Amino acid sequence: MSSLKAQIIAESRRIGIDKIGFTTAEPFYELQEPLERQKALGHNSGFEHQNIPERIYPELTFEKPQSIIAIALAYPTQIREEIPKDEKRGMFARASWGVDYHDILQEKMKQLVTFIESLQPPAGEVWRFAPQVDTGEFVDVAVAQRAGLGFVGRNGLLITEEFGSFVYLGEIVTNLVFEPDKPGVFACGECTRCIKACPTKALLGDGSMNAKRCLSYQTQTKGTMPEEYRKKIRNVIYGCDICQMVCPYNQGRDFHFHEEMEPKADEVYPKLRPLLTISNKEFQKQFGHLAGSWRGKKPLQRNAIIALANMKDNKSLPLLWELVQNDPRPVIRATAVWSIGRLGKKESALWHERLTAQKALEADEEVLLAIEEALKIFVNP
Image 1 (tube, rainbow, N blue to C red):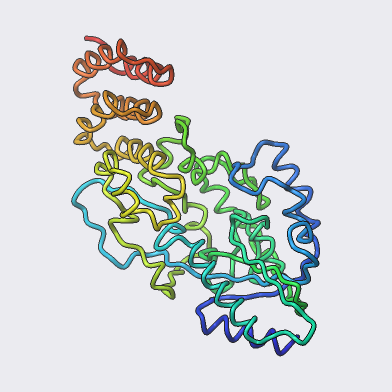
Image 2 (spheres, rainbow, N blue to C red):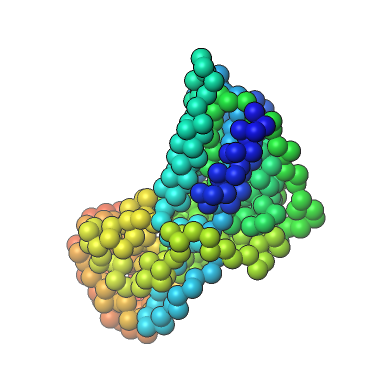
């Protein structure tokens, strides 16, 4: 299979796969203890695959697997367009720039599988393939490390020699046998910059994290964001890049290999105020192709409301008040009240009067609690 492996590597380069590696489909025994510990501690986000055995044993989801082909695509970290300074803008984390990476990776893997199948198996053999991205069973970084693409750093991300951690990962399970590549070796040394930089102390230092404390997770939830995280998201309305931006392996890394990954200013640095009233149709048109749109518009609108307060945008107060009065979603109303509490202090008497009146009209307990907290700020003169 050495010649087949060489042909696959050559084709991967031709179709724009930036890095490729091969490993066996043997169980990932080393993941058993950390995955069970993560679950027992309540540190899972809930977004990951819930069946732990299926994350460890490829044979539970693929008949007689022999190998896994791991791929990586490098994504840009700097936007080429100028970001207008016309009004307050939010930001999507870099992993959500351009077309949804799930679609890009799936297309690349589809092209690679089509190429392999075109080579035609020997008589009597049937080649089988199962591509997946991070919505599948596997722990992508574990597969990529074992396939030699890089090593898993203290922040839990795969760090490659060429591209740092700014890579999207995918893998293809197959019944083909390939000579495995040499696994990546941990190379963070004594560096703990990512641990120290994490504003919520989500990183635990050994490559694991309390995912529920990660700002990326917090920006993707649909309920009310706990107050301890609100100021920490600053103006980022989706994801978090902090642990990547401080990593020594990422300094000066910026790759523009894939046109579909290129960010547009109004998409990844969107104006915040228009987000508050955007229609579903407009939302899909502007953001529907981004990975950051997968949870719908409500979490992003909630985050935009918080960001407006963090950026001290007093001009947004009329819009926020409109939400408090008329938005049917309690999460949005409660968050808007919180932001008014941060932005309306110069007109304390006015907001005390308005919120007192609104309290009598409000039925939702969460919103009522937010109003009570805001009224403590707007002391009645």
